[in-house]
Image (cartoon, rainbow, N blue to C red; front, side, top):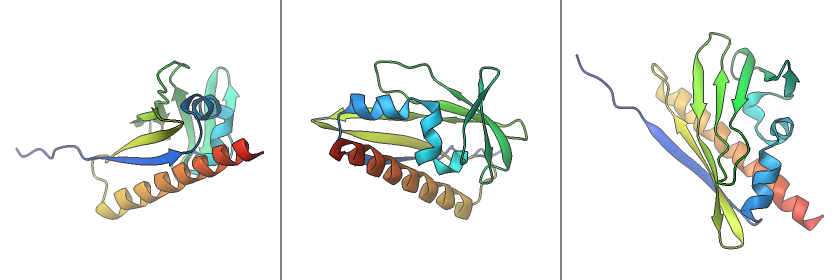
Amino acid sequence: MDTIAPVSRHLSTHIDRPAAAVYAYASIPSNWPEWAHGLGSSMDEIDGQWISDSTALGGRVAVAFTQKNEFGVLDHDVTLPSGEVIHNPVRVIRDGDGCEVVFTLRRRPGMSDADFERDAAAVSADLATLKRLTERTARG
C-alpha cells in the first residue's frame, strides 16, 4: 500500500514591531476575530472553552490555544463540527527590532490542490491583517 507523505507549507510575514508586542496581542484569543478571519467573526469563551462560528470551517468550532509562554508559540487546535482536530503550529520569532510570524499549514488527508491553495491564501491574508493591525498600533 502506498502512503502519501504529509505536505506542509510555512507561510510567514515580517512585522515591524517587537516580537513581545506582537505576541502580547496575538496571544489573546478574543483578538483573533480581528485578524484570523478563517476562525470566524467572534470568539467566545464558554465554560472555559473558546468557541467560534466559522463559515469557512463548516460551522461551530472549538479552539484550544496553547498556554501563554516566553517562546512566542501560538499553537492552537481547532475541533471541527465533524470532530476532526486540526493542529496549527504558529510562531512569533524575534528578528532584530521586528519579528516574523510563521504559520505552518498542513494539508489534510483528501484535501484537493485547490482547497490547499485556498487555505494558504486565507492564512496569508490573515497574516497580512495581523501585520497591518500590529504595525498600526505602533503608529497610534
